[in-house]
Image (cartoon, rainbow over all chains, first blue to last red):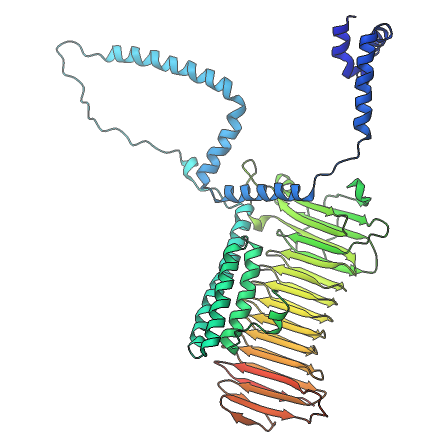
Length: 248
Length: 317
């Protein structure tokens, strides 16, 4: 065995993956070749060092981030029209066969070209005859039905819709209570009006800054409590029990 | 997870062999059932659970032990769809155990509506662990825990019983029922009712928008109940120096109070009825003083108001 042969098999040898005869040949070469033996020794040491390293767990934030991105992609996917999802699925399925498809398409194109030329030649009017009508109506292009039909509702889309509905419900209730509070506001003294306006503006700013979903829902819940107290009790300083304990 | 020294004691996936979940006996046999039990590392008990099941029911039962047992039932019309459903259990070194159910999406799965698939989860947890739990449309039940929790639902019912510690619940359209709560309670719903029975903590705060609030055997020191459109009916026992604020915009208010000391009650509404208690009227407010203050001790305060409906108040001997 030559040095090149042995070095290409070193990894398998150290992993114990070589058959007995091949392993024996490599071992025999290593006994007599200092350079290859040194290389094998270095690689074995490197492996031992790697094994001795403590296991490294990914930080929690990494997995949370991956989950969040996956969830966002799934939500975005669920919001695409059904025909786009179908098209993407078909494309993904055929992508591995792209080289073969490209060759096949090229061959088909050449064949169609040859046939078209021969067809045109065969339809060439004889000298002295009238040309074919150029504006004859043609049949409309039919879209394939399967591509146009909407995809049946999937649980992912329903869950995303639920989340959106939930936030929309909170928003609707808060808007209605703002109207009720504004009606009550007409009878408040100026300092009450100012305190209410300031608090309402703070809630709106908080809503704009809050992340969609549970973060925004939490702000809406605090806002609804505050607006109820304002509309019913003329309480604008947020000193209710709920207010003193923070947002529910 | 090896570093956490969490010992997985038992993992038993079985097909159609499991008992039906206690949470709902009407469901068909589960196509896939699994049980897992995890032990805490020595001197590092499980302190908190963060659970999110958007795909079905969740029941959490506290018990006098240290381990956590998780039972899951996956329901789906076929095996491919069952394979889309996942339950992830993630213990952390700080004593928090996180459980999340999820469903595969993307382009390669066979679409299935939520009605055709769900995951029910039953957890037995150390009584002292605090519970943070969220469901979407499933029923959320928590019982026998001592460190309270934060419970969230969109349209699913929230049912809590025998809970100590600070408890927060919030729901959009799911009914909330709290029985035997011995810590502070804060229950908020949007378009659903709140039922309270045997509540005895320092504070009780409950609110509903289009929903009723009904309370029985409430003895919290401070009580604040608010609705926009729903009726409020309360049978309470007001502690010495307690404070009660009951308010509604359009809903009737009916409060029956058993008091152990002097009370000052005032109310306003379209029609105010204090039954047999003598009252005085000033502007919109009807006021009554029941019992005599002793020395400089503050009296218990009751404030009832419904802007567009009626108020009834009675002292029960």
